[in-house]
Amino acid sequence: QLQFVESGGALVQPGGSLRLSCVATGVRLDDYAIGWFRQALGKEREGLLCISNRGRSTNYAPSVKGRFTISRDNAKNTVYLQMDSLNSEDTGIYFCAEQIYGSSCPERARGFTSWGRGTQVTVSS
Image (tube, rainbow, N blue to C red; front, top):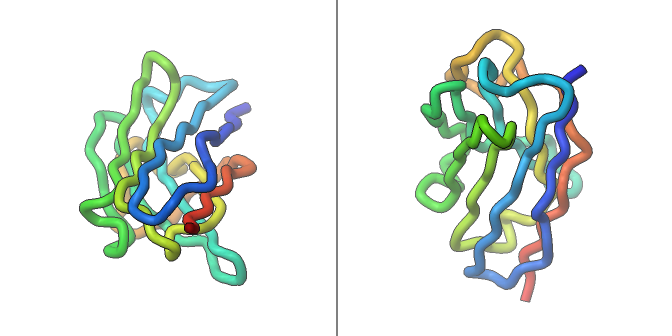
């Protein structure tokens, strides 16, 4: 059974950077598209980025374009989210999930499942 474990969240000052990791257990990620999402307190979960099994990325959130980058290392069964120029609006719990419809990323952040518990990112001075 596929399970994700997210890590790397922390308290960081505005303008800082973090790299989140999403490690999969139970299944090889080679054939899956993986997405990163976040949920701020009191808000709905928001899709951020997706990466296909071949490494092609799709952006779902204009607010992170140019600041966040998704990547993957299939040998380590891990997907990463590099976050730069962080601001207070980036505060939230960050999750990864698999795309259930195939190895490519959909145009919209739909059809994702196998959610991990998430990792908390807090941007504050």
